[in-house]
Length: 349
Image (cartoon, rainbow, N blue to C red):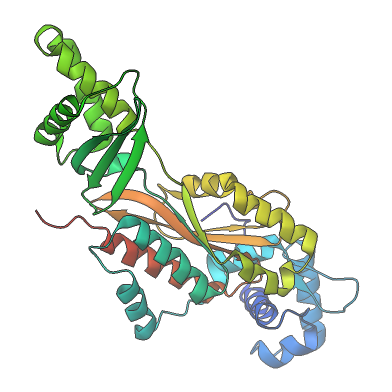
């Protein structure tokens, strides 16, 4: 998880009061006072003692006092201590796991799986679901065909090992007749089926150097078409449920929502955030400014990487208010990452 403030100085009573206060605030959305904590914290201490402890927690930056209330609310630092050491997770029920597995089945196309995962995360948490898209270069291609179009344009049809089919219209530097296109496709299919795209480009360049004389004509055609047809393409991230944030009390300010939606539209900040987490094992939580979504200090992001074939393919997560039920959202994100990764495992050949 992201860097946290030191909380080793908190004694057991302070930790219990902080846990109870944040849990009540997440549930109700209202500042929590000493009388409420006296009833619900399970401590045999007076309200006056509780007020003193709360004042100490405020002094170290874990709580804040709104001007309109005698109660207190957690700060970003308070949430950080809570999610790192105080939150009590709620394991997913068997019904929820069954739902994830049934709607993220193995053997489906990658784009459909990613879209379903994003929608599921949004539906199960009522926030925004986000999934980074694996780079096509990570997948082996199974077959390629070239179809001549008008002028110099060529339609490249790529079938990948994960059952995805991509149609890419390319425009080489010169026109190719159907026989040339068929010869290039046959060469690629015969020699490179089952290899990742980035490997193909590197091997072609190496072969070009090693067999320049006898293979120059064919390989030049192959390299040119392959450079265009096998180039990276597609979206970097799949989002679902952005409009759900409009009903979240903590994010009801229209100006802040507009800024957040603009961040979703650009996707750049979200993608950068996911890239920061892709090689970190397990769930990571970014609270307020840690999320890097501009001035959205009321937003938290919960992420986890998903893996298949022993490789990290991408990251999925949930974007919502800092006042979210972390004990539920964290297990949902972890389970979704596990199920999505299992669904994307390469089928045995």
